[in-house]
Structure formats: structure tokens, C-alpha cells
Amino acid sequence: MERGTLELENTGPFDLQSTVESGQSYLWWRVDGNDYQDETVYGGESWYLTTTREPEAPAVIRVRQHNGKLEWESTVDATPILKKRLRLTDDLDGIRAKTPTDPLIETAFEQYWGMRIVRDPTFPSLISFICSAQMHVTRIHEMQQALRETYGTPISFGDSTYYAYPTPAQLADATEPELRDLSLGYRAPYVKRTAEMVADGTSPETARDRSYEEARDYLTQFVGVGDKVADCVLLFALDFLEAVPLDTWIRKTIAEYYPGCDRGNYSETSAAIRDRLGPTFAGYTQTYLFHYLRHAGEEAPKGPIQSTK
DNA sequence: CCCCAGGCACCTC
DNA sequence: GAGGTGCATGGG
Image 1 (cartoon, rainbow, N blue to C red):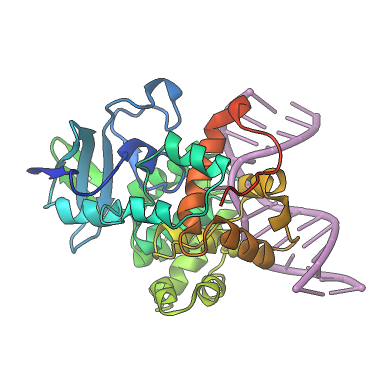
Image 2 (cartoon, chains in turn blue, red, brown):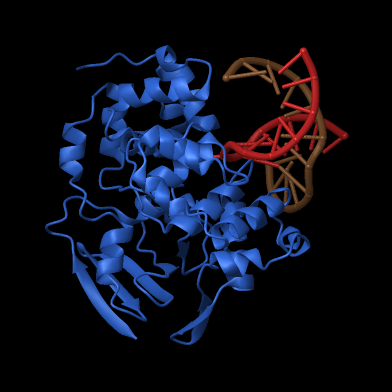
């Protein structure tokens, strides 16, 4: 067992809770087992666990944010892993300075300032977003836990055993009926076939070598991956901070607040909203808007938003 | 009983 | 390429 602290003085604003609970990642979970979206503990001093295969062996990390720093316990030195996975080297102030402003964007940034994009490992990100199609957030989480506990490599940590996210080979060995038994429903064959493709050498990672739109097309070759899931993997794993996943919520957001960006089909609407939210960091802006609007309820403004810059 | 959940594959045309 | 359908599962 190793322990350490990661000072946040020089990283700029950071909010662990909103970062890992804003629907970007299904690969973190809360130690106390409280419901992922339980408002009553929102802002509390909760702990989180994740397993990872970086930098080499599977590892467990427990971390919380306390007194302006991250306090962690792990089977390995967690500091470099946390810096990477939580994008602590992103210049958040610089990103915001380059983002077009309007009243809605300003409110979203202010409300959750410090939230960062996650940088999840690529294969787990791919599989978890395949599972996310037409599914409630809490159940997507449960599916990932089930996959981990059924197929992942066990890691002992403290008094407990945890499980790393399954590798492509481990998941490719799963059978479709087994996956259906884990409540994956019609996503079961998608997960298996994509795991087989990756295990056989088709690398989602090489999307990095392409331009954004070509990378998105490249990822849709995986079974169960359309434009939306591809955008999630690009944004939350592969460092394409311009990606804006057009899910039902963002589509509603566009129709309500940025109707001029609604071009009827995915690729043109995507281009328009990326331009509107700031071509380089549209994914950051999208994540703030998404998180804010999902929690705003009746507080949310109505009608089209005028640009103030 | 209905409807829906951060869509996608597959089939038409 | 655009437009419709079926799809598993659990919760409201």
C-alpha cells in the first residue's frame, strides 16, 4: 500500500466530484456505494476508486479531494496516473479564455468551475460507451462493474479484492449469453465483436493519428459505435477536445438555445456547434453545458442564446 | 399497461 | 445518404 498527496496549488481550479460524476466516465465509482447521482451527498467529501492498467500492471487507486489537495492510497505511485487521468495539466483558465462567451456558457462555467475532462483508457472507454446506448447512467455503471468483476484481473488492495477492467482478450473470450446475463441486452454482441476486433489487432488508439472527423469515421468501424459513441471516446479518452457528442440532451440543448446550429444531420450539426462553442475546445464547453443543464431543471434559461462576444 | 433511457445496426428507397 | 424499425432491460 502506497499513500501520497497531490498538491493542486499549481494546477489551477479542480473539482474531483464534478469531474468524475458529470457523466463523462463510467469507470470511476464511489467507495461508500452511494448512488452515483445522489444529490444529498453532492459536494461531500466522498471517495472514489478506479483501477487502471497504466503504467503497467493493473492497479487500484482510492482518492479524495481534501484541503486543496488530492489524497490517495494505491497499489502503485498514483500521482502521475491521477495527473494524466484527470487532465491536471490542462490550462483551464487558458481554455476558458479561448472559448466564445454567452450567458449560458458563463453560468455553466461558473457553476462547476474546476470540472475537467477525464482521460479514460481507450478500450474501457470504448466498451463503456457502447454499453451506454439507450441506457440509464446508473445502469451503465452497473454494467461496467459487472464486466470488471466477471472478466477482469483481480487485484488485492487493503482488505478487499478489486478487479481491473477486462482487457480486449479477456472480453473477447466472453460469450454472448454470458454478456446478456450481465444485463447488457442487445449490446452484448456489440461488446463481444468489438473486443474481438481490438484483440485481433484493430486499434482504436490509432485514431489519434487522424484529423478529428477522420478519427470519428475510423472509430465507427467498431460494432456498436456510431457518431455519438465515437465522439465520446474521442473526447474522453483520445484527447480530441473539439469533439461534441450529439446525444439526446445536447440535441435538445441545441434546439432550445442554439437553433441556428441544428442542421438536421449529425456531421453538419456537429460542425456548426463546434464552431459556436469554440472550435478547439468545444468538448470542454459541451461538458460544462451538459452537466449544468442536467442539474439546472427549472432554473435553466429559456430560448435562444445571443452571443456576447 | 405504457414510456423512456447520453443510439446503433439493418433494411429500404 | 436519408429515413424508418427493431432492439434488451429495468424503473417510473
